[in-house]
Length: 462
Image (tube, rainbow, N blue to C red; front, side, top):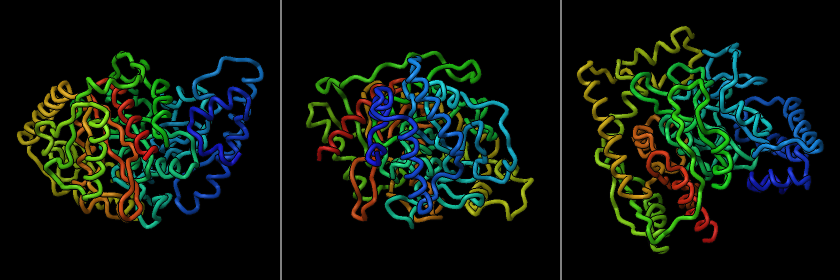
């Protein structure tokens, strides 16, 4: 039974539905794994064991009674502390949410429940999600499974870490600037940021947690897993309008099918014009491009126009808010200084330096729209784009704000809204995971996931 926690999620579901194993047995195995590994990595921050086992027993009962079974029936999974869920304590890593009780569950949670998922617990995040590492005063820092002195990334850092060590079969993360893809890269798992507008963000209590008000939504939920096939399994469950979130159009989700390599056009770049990645990350991108070239695809080096302005067009207007730190400070103004995390304080110190007048800010909004158009037209010329996920491998704890531009490789595609997946594709000289980012045009998750599956297969066969 111990080995079952290493299987892909879709295989676990098949075994449960066929009665080869029970959901209760599988759930107990995952709970034991969490108990064994969580003291060292600090990834899962809230567990309701009784409720979890009750869900698993109910899943087994449904099978015995011959009821209709959902695509995730009996599957144990974890949830990032980002979305309203009953039976757990949503805190967003901040004392600002002390005593918070959601009145309604988020749409993603209700859909996962309906699909048969069993919830193992909530995973760690940075305070108010505004950092590329999961560390806060409530729960402490989540450690990288490959080096405990390093970060697991953020903001979905707890989710990535627990998945990497087989403590969960599937995860739900969120991504407003790389918060799914960056931890996936750091921890050696796969993570999908779908097209913004594919998955409802109903159920996030964090102010401005889903986007930038009337300008555009730049954040989204998305699945995280050890295997690309499990992203493919989860995406249809999460997708589509819910009648609550007004930013979700009714765009059909196409099935993932094998790519026609002879007709495939692939672009890649190793440098976004902002920061040059380490050589091992550059080499990983080049190897990924070569995989497609060797299969017969047309491959060339190219990048979207204006991508070199990503930091000014994403981090500063959306995270720093360009108001001299006023908005950032106001969110925690009711908290005493000793109840605000060091990372949040660093975030505020950065934001204080960015203060634009309305004319300057308006010009940036115009450039954001231009970049979105440019990227859309660029991706009409290429089926996929391969890039670094980050300029470095996992950083030591506490250093994510030292070189914040290292994370611009993911930020770009929150601005464009494009679906993007980080897929494991090698190890660094230090023995740390390296992911490469695969991007496709709007609403083409089926393409980006098919391409990610090709790279995953190539890596596993290497």
